[in-house]
Image (cartoon, rainbow, N blue to C red):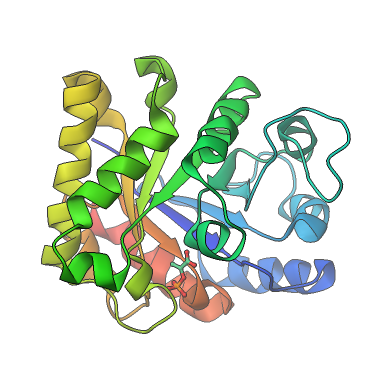
Length: 256
Ligand code: PEP
């Protein structure tokens, strides 16, 4: 059985000291549980303070929001996978729709980032998802499949097993309009089938597929009620310790 994963993506929010205050508050509200894994993805500048506030072997993991595919060099403003590993990051979000739409990231660079992350022992969280226009013209599956192909092509089954896929319909991100469980499940099933067809059954059965897009404490339960949904990538609702703790607590009791 796949262990649910809840990832909080702070995006460009919280300074280093705000990150520490959040962690202190959040940890008062929720305890570790074997039934769900929790990851926070602060901005680069808050990673070190977050790591120190969490302490060694914390039950809350750390993730980054982006990574460059080279290890070092003349790439002003970029951060490499070894730099993230040294800060104890376990995960890195790759191909978020902000990166695709605002920063022009394409599948080729996303693929390089996925591969660089894996080479350096980071688990990529590959984000895929269609725009509203694409959904309305019946293109959801082909858009998502193209993004999956773009990001994952050439990975071995062993590598793919450590990748997390986040289905994040662009029209649901930050809009307050989450996908229904039925809409999410349909796409999640097609993603799992994509993995099964392109790799094998065993790999498809272990890859975690998260839903992201306006997840809140109010709508997390019906989403996680489906075993096709292995957790959530949370944006706005992870900025408050209270609402993120409520989401995490729901996940911890859902698959007991
Ligand atoms: C996101 O940006 O990945 C996201 C899911 O944001 P929100 O939860 O605010 O829709």
